[in-house]
Image (cartoon, rainbow over all chains, first blue to last red; front, side, top):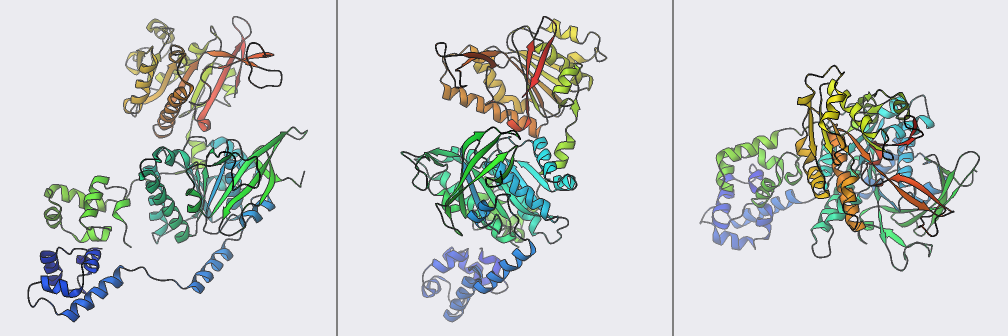
Length: 336
Length: 289
């Protein structure tokens, strides 16, 4: 923060004198320069008294600091939000219990090998919420071109033919090929959400289908730049979720874990989520999906999957459940 | 509400760094500065500092996302003159999508590609036609337009070139996004599989990397520039064991013909793969998957 922007509270001559004789331009320069006595020694005589300078330094520190929040106010706020948008099941009751419900302003990570049902799960959660809340809107960010508009429209019609057109209007799709484009999309979203004249449904869900090709190329063993980019991006997502009450689901790929994955309850899991060991700490819950077997059936072939929580802030980890997918629709294994 | 300069969409990143080093963190700081003061402080021209100030005040560009309903309705389908192909594609080939036509030699892949070329030229759009096997000569193209209504100006609208080797193909793919402009509607890659045949010993990781590059460029071209892409591909024989797992000549129980390049280079959400199965010299079936 430049000192010039605090000018009505501090005189402009003092700011100019600080800049000229001590090279102090910003608040960090002023606070960390040294004691007020050192500053007074460098300034020309008679510019300011010691007590005034100390008062101004305190003022600048207060302007630069982050406001505090009271815990009870935060709790009341979240209770209000959950009243306005009640939780909707994703279709599998056990899965909802595993993660504590897909809702709240949290960032979920869904990881698993190819074909394990990550996109199907994210799509089903989003569609169920769009169907239940006519005031909400979802943003689907596709990074690899795998999103098929026709197939998604068919899935929505399968759930509810009557309102399917309106639901299709509220599902926004955008493409992101690199991390800079992603920052642009998020910034545009942030600007539109924080402008006071919001008309129409508000975005409550963001799905980032496959963050791995965006971040993986820059992660390297010799430079920390990729890791810094990853941390900045995930922090922005988290900030967006908390500020506007949006739930974000991030889909992640896999990499090998030798000899087997320690955080899994099964010894047969030999892969782990991609993007390194620190990625799981940047999200609120890491869900691992894997495909067990395919079963042909007179009603249509379906596949059985296992969902496991590796790490979660709200629920226990190393807990798991099974579900099945038939023609892209998730259901519980108990209702066969 | 102060907006962080480092994440502003319209200022270039070099400018953002210079501003940040001088202590400007939010757009509010920048809005209070005059062009002269800014140029004196950063040591740059007055015109540059004025452009920075106007750039920071410009609102961000158009919305970067579109609704699913508009995505479905936006793509108009193009019907070719073969009814079977149109039915297989569910009405026609939508614009901005990718079609891979594969089949054994002698099936009418090139004829179908030329048919789509004719449709695009009649709609007054440019077509880029790449021939890698010398199978479609200029005379063949001329014959296609012989009876068409656009016979007069097809020569201006069809850009035709030969590419034979894999490096040539990759160079073309690399430069594709800068070559196309608003009027380009269709890209035809007549036999995208042939350049890969001339390098049979390429490592599979390198081959996958090349195919991924093609995937990226195709995705960007079709999504952002609304370019329709048609590729033709030869087929290769794959041997499977009795239980369906991949096998070789000793263990194999059945052989299937699959398109040579696999599906890595096609973005799954916007591609159609058409396989042509000839039954006699003039009839056959087609199947989309």
